[in-house]
Length: 221
Length: 231
Image 1 (cartoon, each protein chain N blue to C red):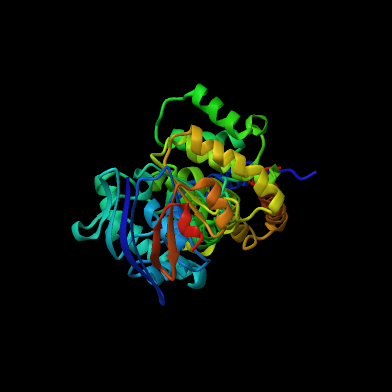
Image 2 (image 1 turned 30 degrees about the vertical axis):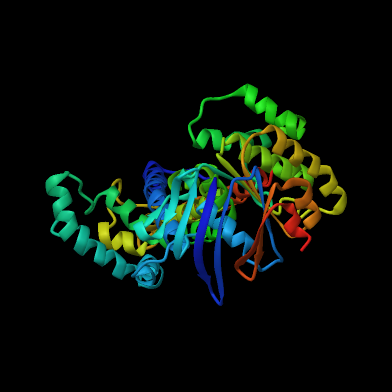
């Protein structure tokens, strides 16, 4: 269960969002500028709320009243960015292995094979990010986040920088991920079609406020 | 062929040692300060920045004299170091290294700072979400990506240290075998009758070292850049 109840002033813009989601995939829907990315950054711990609380399964990550802020690196929340953000100086294997090394987890070759098979990136392991296509880069970013063994996975418009053809290429992987990986996800998008395919619950965000919450049906209205 | 005399060799070897030691000690401190200036805001930041750049604009003789006042035998820091740790700078080659390090510092810090500023902070954030603590983000992402700038700063600092003259001669004088670097040896030779030929030989050596350093840095920077961009 992910509970978010936060307020944050960002220049002229005020983000004030409150929701609790039990869904496997919580879709965060809204136009650009509605505060989706800021909200996700707060869940990740990259941005600190001015006021409010964030918790996962009762574990408090932010509580401004108690001056509590768990830093991003101790949250165990995976994050797939729109622009992949692979480390350019490391090859694909080292990128995939980064989270495991930083969290001092034991090497788990079976798990790595499962993830590389799921995402079809096994043949890319010795390549550098500079030599990957946009779709491949996004799949590696997904694998890198998964292999850090997060308890929640944030995906901020992971298809946003790809063209139509590439999107159709990645979407099946995301569906497989939802059905096989058993990690709750928050999926940010401004594309209703994408969310209908993936999300189990929807949070509708408009001008920094949650306007509706519920099943994928809320996307229609 | 040029015949280099043992005295001249002594000056060349000393110059290389002084510049190498100055660069090695200045680099970690330079990286730390470059990171502070590039990534943190704190009270007195512009003062620190000015302090680092001071040796660049002060007359070298002033820097040398200030070093003598603080790090000399009776200086505030020099006296304490000599008494408690047995480290003496005044009129020693270590003092020459200190003077060269201080003079080279602004040139060393600047490219490092610029290259750290150029590292995309989004990559550092990505590393954080993967569980990397701040120090490890720096060691595994920021520093490797800033490496071309670090190498450029080191080479530039080394080249400056090799050529340093004013602050060194003011602080530690011009003692053959102890503090007489290539620069101060040339200075002595051109004041001696019939010293021209020897001075010229050292000038040639100085030009060769400087050129090699510049070509070397170019090569390192290109290799490092290629490595980073994955080709």
